[in-house]
Image (cartoon, rainbow, N blue to C red; front, side, top):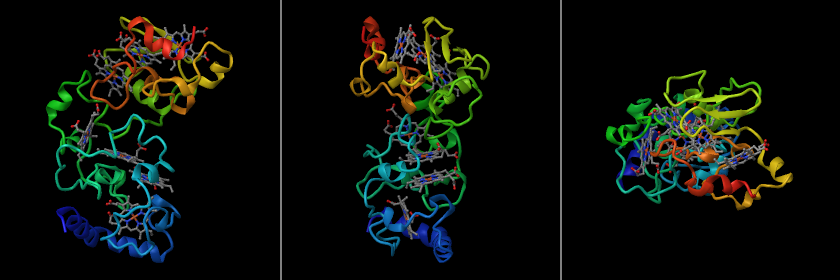
Length: 264
Ligand code: HEC
Ligand code: HEC
Ligand code: HEC
Ligand code: HEC
Ligand code: HEC
Ligand code: HEC
Ligand code: HEC
């Protein structure tokens, strides 16, 4: 048996088995998974720590049922890392870094993280500080979480997607202290203050616009151009969870970014 399953076994015995058994007898696994049954994720409902890794499909699929935004503009998940992460972060049976590498699915601490570290300290378990220092915002937007989607909206005039809200928490000229500011008009017109001088609507449904013509169908957009909740938002034009903070999703030489949606 390898180190990973040894770790899982020890961890389970120490921390998890008791609450799991207790909650099974009371009918619910864990407040987090609600009334989900074991075989919705595991191959059997008699899950022992040894075969708990045998799941009916990938975690990126299992978890997305309830957390649909947790792989979009998020930390990469479901890939084989070049280097094995340090002890508290096990890879799955395929040797891949996935949700359960960072999260203790059946845990109970806030955030369900496998380490007590929070913020940059959590990330430094696997990344050298220099990894973040090279980023335009020194990683300040990423170390907050493994995912960009935010939930607090103080833009009452327009329904913004959760990724744009996260960007605006620093870049809105009303908030934050990032030197690069943008302004949001109440009707959803975004004004870039910097050298681009670009104004553009955000928070508007893309399919509504395509129905009037002048836009490529959604199915023909480059995959990098995201439409969170079906709307134009910051991550339609700017890359999400990336070391190239702020970089465009499509290089705009010859207005290529603009013309990936606009069909003139
Ligand atoms: C939403 C999916 C999901 C459901 C439902 C679920 N599990 Fe899990 N469980 C997981 C994942 C993912 C892991 C981590 C697998 C790995 O380490 O590769 C896990 C791990 C475990 C482990 C190993 C210890 C640990 O926490 O890593 C046990 C034991 C376990 N589950 C028992 C259960 C039992 C018993 C039920 C039903 C009462 C259940 N699980 C329901 C997803 C689920
Ligand atoms: C049946 C729906 C459901 C599934 C499936 C599900 N979750 Fe959740 N999850 C929830 C709900 C609801 C909450 C928020 C309420 C709570 O924390 O109890 C939550 C909260 C979380 C949190 C945040 C906890 C906190 O304290 O902030 C994490 C992390 C998380 N889930 C990870 C996962 C992972 C990883 C998987 C896949 C193995 C998964 N969830 C599958 C429903 C689900
Ligand atoms: C590299 C580590 C890492 C990976 C991989 C990862 N997460 Fe997270 N996740 C985090 C961190 C850090 C937080 C913030 C936790 C906190 O401080 O409360 C978080 C928060 C969450 C939350 C609660 C907040 C929110 O954004 O809704 C959910 C749900 C969640 N993760 C689900 C997932 C799922 C599902 C996967 C796999 C598809 C996944 N995570 C993969 C690190 C990770
Ligand atoms: C369990 C180990 C682990 C943890 C914890 C972790 N990462 Fe990663 N991360 C990786 C691995 C492995 C890669 C892929 C290889 C690489 O680029 O170093 C990666 C890639 C990335 C990327 C590259 C995305 C891209 O392609 O541009 C970013 C950005 C990132 N991590 C940020 C973070 C942040 C921020 C945190 C803390 C919230 C964090 N990581 C926590 C292991 C981890
Ligand atoms: C935690 C605060 C924070 C958040 C959240 C944040 N940024 Fe930034 N951003 C910064 C800082 C700081 C800079 C560096 C400003 C400078 O050097 O003038 C920056 C720079 C930028 C730049 C200019 C990059 C360059 O190379 O000059 C762009 C574009 C940008 N951010 C877009 C975004 C987008 C899009 C989001 C959401 C996906 C976002 N930012 C979220 C803090 C943040
Ligand atoms: C329709 C596409 C589009 C959308 C949507 C968009 N941007 Fe931009 N953004 C651009 C372009 C193009 C530039 C110029 C980049 C360059 O010249 O490299 C830019 C530049 C920036 C800059 C750098 C300084 C400046 O003002 O020129 C910041 C900061 C920025 N955007 C933030 C945001 C934020 C935050 C959002 C969401 C609220 C957003 N952008 C939405 C296309 C967009
Ligand atoms: C993600 C797709 C997308 C990209 C990329 C994009 N646009 Fe748009 N644009 C739209 C949509 C959708 C609307 C209509 C929004 C609405 O319903 O008002 C729009 C509206 C506009 C308008 C207002 C037109 C009007 O009559 O309402 C202008 C001007 C514009 N875009 C210019 C640009 C420029 C310049 C770029 C490149 C920097 C760009 N767009 C990139 C999707 C996009």
